Length: 290
Image 1 (cartoon, rainbow, N blue to C red):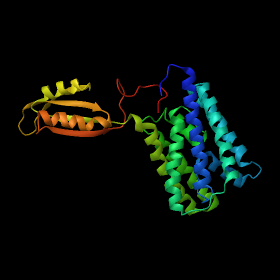
Image 2 (image 1 turned 90 degrees about the horizontal axis):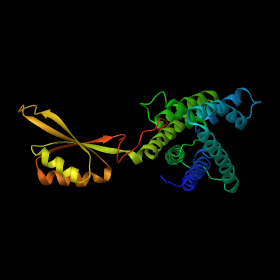
Image 3 (image 1 turned 135 degrees about the horizontal axis):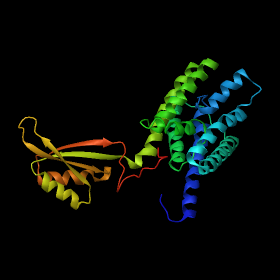
Image 4 (image 1 turned 90 degrees about the vertical axis):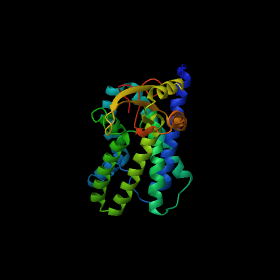
């Protein structure tokens, strides 16, 4: 959401954070906790530390582990990250404990808990990341690693960290089933997270090869689409051809195919997925973008 009013923008961001925290609490209390499935992250690390050093409580240890991450996060992204993430941590913890006190969810089939818990977890974390907040732990660590590993999606980075923690958790507590179910849930959550974070800016690219490329290019321009003409040569005929390259949003694919085939029914159209498109009409690059 882009708004000229700072108040509306602030209300929108903290509304999204609150919704993300509510989904996170529901996910943990409904799917993970009753079925003893590990969520990984710094909570899992704190559980491992507590196993060997019982004097350190899990909650306090988790907070201590987050301190250096928050320090690095503030240096990279400013105080806004600290404030919004502290709000997310506080609200998430209160909602998690409050929901558990109001209703005790019963265990269910572990595979169902993995699937639906993973989806809900990914959606909740994705919502927080879209407005520049995290609950700390895995998401904040992944956000910082993203500066060094730009080629990896935020979901894959979270998955890598969580899988390592879950495996260490399984070794510590000798719970193989917990690890296997946890890895399934984390993989699903990484897919859901990427869908939330990148889904709104995903686009498609079409390569159009036709003897009437000039007419097709003009028609696409009339549709207010950006195009690029590439020089090509037919592999069999050796004839010079112009290839029309066009980036567009998913909702425009039917109109583009109809417009091209109306001008040249034999046109060769190759449609590809574009992970991200930056520029006019699409996304904008920022140094801290995911």
